[in-house]
Length: 352
Image (cartoon, rainbow, N blue to C red; front, side):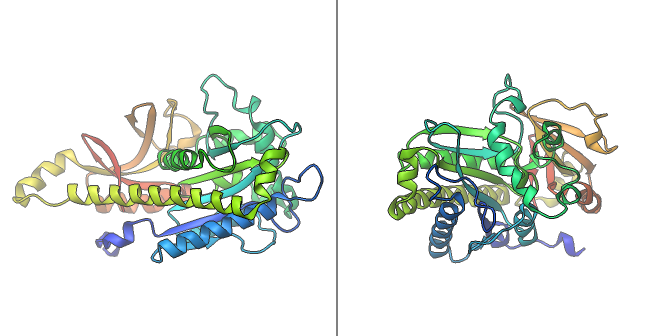
């Protein structure tokens, strides 16, 4: 019964964040037109500044960087670092680039289909996606490591659109806070929030965002990025976003704890819960309806909870929490990004 022991409140708060400085080592990332500035240098600088700010303000939070020096780190290893640490949040920092010198500004990306329901996922923004994912070509035996994934083949992206969406809501919230905080900063133009199939986001089992902090191919953005004071301002805005998200994250747990306090008459409360409360595992969420026979369910018959435009897909449902936890152990082997939820007439709430 060890898995059913109550956790301390501090154990449920946002306790670990992983900051991923994009590219590094033999992978320079995007390069400026004059060949003198590299994406890997800017991302490491900003990531380091952000890390220090979080450590100073929140000593109780464990801050992990996927790289703290100019070294090459495989995409799957970046995600594995976060997964093994049991991180609550993954922030991947990048700098954008384009063939033209006119595009500029920042954007925030989460995993998924295109943000525009009328837009073909593979017809828009795919040059950025392919460029970021092409890092796998520098890795040994990448086709085996990434299950035959080919960054140049659009068909390879289809399998990424359903999984990891278990964290869609939280990732979107993080992206929204970051996007808002970056407004008015050194990188002026706001290019919005996007849903795109980035490998590094797909492999993480937690809320995750990828931030493109300006275009190295744009003169104005590059001028800002080359100044340490401007990079510090960008890091400060990212820190403010982290602080706001942590407050929301921790606050939501306090609300859940208050709601779970037993009533004065436990016997009557228990008799109601048997009929009204169930437990299960949310495997992912999607804005579209997915047929129960879809192979992504691997034979499970999901129950669908609709929250606005989002559909939560839940399997392994039992009235007994203990039975649901046993089922969850097997489900997580197939769906690493899944998590347990408490089902009530009001909806599905995540819990430990």
